Amino acid sequence: MPTYIQTGKMTQATMEGLLNEPEDRFQAVSDALAAAGATLKEYYFTTGENDWLLIFEADSPDAFAAAALLASADGAAYNMKTVHAWTSSEFKDIAAKAGGIRDKYRVPGG
Image (cartoon, rainbow, N blue to C red; front, side, top):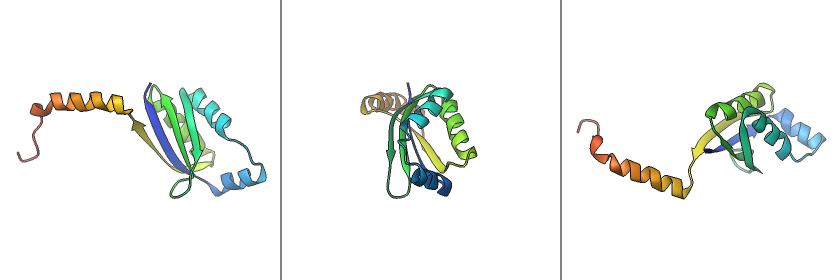
């Protein structure tokens, strides 16, 4: 199943909610992703540019898009970015495929 990494920011209302009622959000986020068709693997709160990092699996980008839309629409999160991630072994196969089609590509103007 494809792996994805998502980062994002919490809204002020979300931060306020966590201050008022601290909770481990893993299960709530996991349940929302599962209902959309994805499986949460890891959930980290982070410092710096983003407030969290999720690692999850989904058969389709539609699954995590639905969960992200829900989080945005209910005012909990914003500035979410999701990227596809490959293991080192998976990327080896991609590199081999690219090498095999190298002669089919030409640089622009070349």
